[in-house]
Length: 328
Image (cartoon, rainbow, N blue to C red; front, top):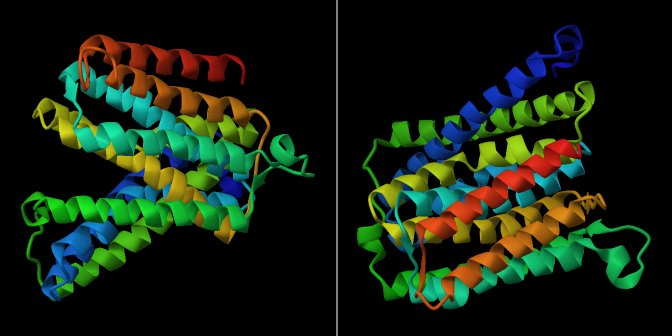
């Protein structure tokens, strides 16, 4: 799409890569806003809106980038995006949120959602490592693996549905009333922006990797992962500042489960993903980050993450990122 431009001006690849996050994030936001307004207009229950349109919208940036990456053969970028996003979510976003205000964690998150996040990391590790587990000729996620992950996602979706039914979703999800034309326009423009932004990011990232001697894995784990996680960062940081710690933690854990089960599963069904052996380090870091979260949550102090633990999370993320850059 921009090959001649990138050849003449290599620095433009960075501009396209970073600039692609603007339409990507706005597209996801407008898709959610417009879709939710349409659903409300046609009397779709608030619960259904929350579990479908809103949930999909939060994962749309990762999903769109992954689909473009996988179909263009950039599987390192696709896998790196998800692993990098999940590591970024726990170590940096939860860490920053805990530094803003200590995070109290409710029972359902403690006993079900966080262990599920650990399970998702282990399942993804096992499904990706065919050669390690059963001496297969190649390692990666095939279409059957993708269907397995989507099966886990359906179970998680059913679980979140039971949680919403126990609570009062009518109060937790505010939807603005918009005209039919405006709602349709927001959905259409949101989809266009998502596709356009995702294409820009993948084109820019692959060109940066080629032109600057960086691996697609590194770009996916750092810049692309951080960019697609910006909505989660904003949501959790604001929630922590307002002392709504349930939202801050639940947003991150839920996002990681969506990324592992829904985004990776959907991507593998569309186009199988081959594993770069170097990505095993990232798979292990993802598992260890979630395990550390469990250790902090089950410490004798009670169900919370304090500022010291938040600082440890941030420090570990900086060490991990530094290691990636130094060894690139």
